[in-house]
Amino acid sequence: MSATPTTATMRSSASATRRAPLLAAYAWLVFAFIYLPIIVLIVYSFNRDGVGGFPPHHLTLDWYRQLFGDGAIWTSVLNSLIVAACSVALSLTLGLPAALALDRANFPGKSLFRRLVLLPLILPGIITGLSLLMFAVCAGAHLSLLTVFLGHGTALISVATTELFAGLQKMDRAQEEASLDLGATPLQTFWRVTLPNLKLSLIAAGLLIFTLSMDEIAVTFFLIGRDNTLPLEIWGRLRRGITPEINAISTLIFAASVILIVIWFQLRTRAQRKAL
Image (cartoon, rainbow, N blue to C red; front, side):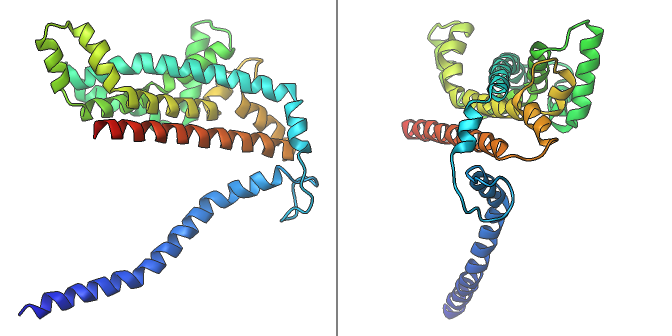
């Protein structure tokens, strides 16, 4: 009687063992499909002969030297950093009250508002950019980095709201209740208990908003004035052909993204260790 379950278990284990190499090979193919183009881009950034002919035979750092002497590129990088940082501040400032309202308050139309928060994430960027452009024209605003910042910040409020709402849903309310029972005001509880517990969610939302703002083209295209951001500067140069200098700046962007991911992972790991 006891042999049948044991036999079935052994067969299941053998079948899983046979599938394991196939799943591993499939996983490696997926990763190769995703990351092989990035590897090729990085390799070409060191190719003396430019783009074409793989693998490159003459490696050099000349393209990076040329990049660091390119004032237009670094001006666009500075513009993108300013816009992204300001967008993070605006989105988190407006997204946090919206997330608190969704989690803590009851009001008419709450379910509809919760769904409308996701609308900017679903709409195509060209629709968002065109609508923001029409609003800017009606408001009499001159197109500049200010309009780009307002556009990014407005479009990315939904990202901040959804990330912070998820963090509030996971939060243990016992600490807030204990703070209120001990005589703290709601504002003191918010600053001393709620915000510290939302630290990881705030960092995650900030990194995501910063990355999306740095990468945004559609909204920026409609709202930009004379000053270019980095994506539009790269796009404008690509119209004249792909150069290793573009590969070099793309490699630096990739490296910065990896560093941000590592920082976020370290912060999350420390927070989990403290929780244990």
